[in-house]
Length: 130
Image (cartoon, rainbow, N blue to C red; front, side, top):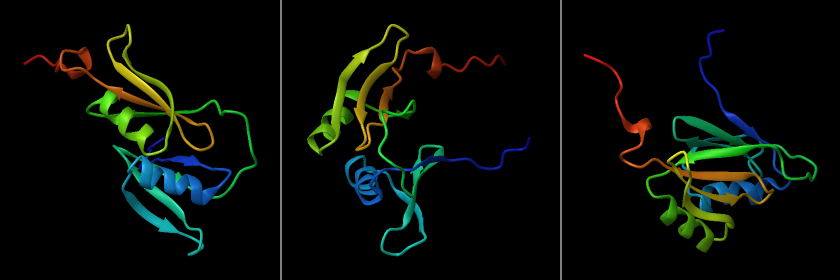
């Protein structure tokens, strides 16, 4: 398989509420909008990927899905997002695997993991040999 592009598709219970959350609270930049001009589907830039918030689903229990967002400062982003109205699930803390993680939830309960990679973590090291 030759994958040329990919994105995460999110079907919220309230399209406008979720679009506004990802755009206005989280602060994701809009890649494009499509469909009904009154309630367009929205594709957001998500680091090196895309998040499409479109359509509608019936209410559901917390889905077995998490969005993993690498940020520069997990503590600061958590505080900013909670102050902007996001539901905080867990403040930032250093995990035993060496990454800082904080958790928030979107309006439908989708967990968003805010991850900060410390400067001295192996993920930041170039392991190539010359």
